[in-house]
Image (cartoon, rainbow, N blue to C red; front, side):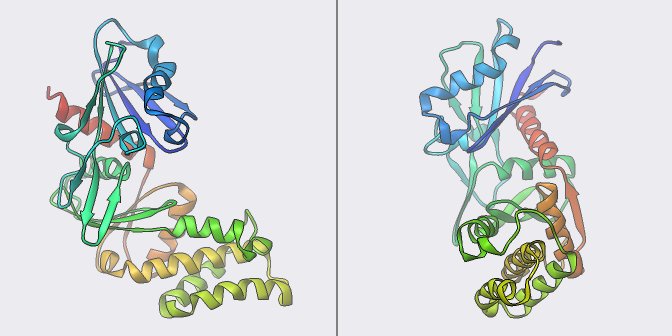
Length: 300
């Protein structure tokens, strides 16, 4: 393997990913571990990182650029939030973490906050940085679907404002822990049912709670198919999200960054509203954001 110039790390709650990087930006190797923030005490992070990369470290010092939950209060070391409007994230505000292994020079990138209405993000800002780095002329909105979906207004290379929706978490709770667990299948889909549910929720969001129970009643009385119920549940939740997020996407181009299945649903819902959508790979954007941060930290 070529000499490792620096290491990019995305440290989430359940997993961490590391990329060994060459000086020319080439990815030499990609590695992953289930040692996420949720399984580690602060003193365990260095060992977890070394378990993945130690064999490829040379005798000199290797910069390690880290994003994600390693910078949370419960993580390796708390990295401060940068308040919007701001360029995401500025490595000059990163938290330098002392290590026992002198070969590691660890920097944890800051998250982003918004005081009114109160909002925080940690990890998504690096994917947004990747979007800005790869498309510097982009002015519009980034939507990052997931457990907690983020909508961010971007202009002139900065995050101007953002908002979080717990749509993914609500879907998981309702489909797995509520009475709807008897109705909603774990797999399968119905495009027409999804589109109709999105339209229903956007036109009458106040009726969504009743429509949710209607899924259970429809299954009991009319043998509603579990895959159709899954699509309708997703459509109702994404529909009320789009209704609330209308100031973000109306008249804007939206860049979707997230897992394929989630982005498929959001793209279908947004396209039906006439919104132009740009799809971007989340791993590519994370790595692009970490690479941009490294280049700013270590100017050539």
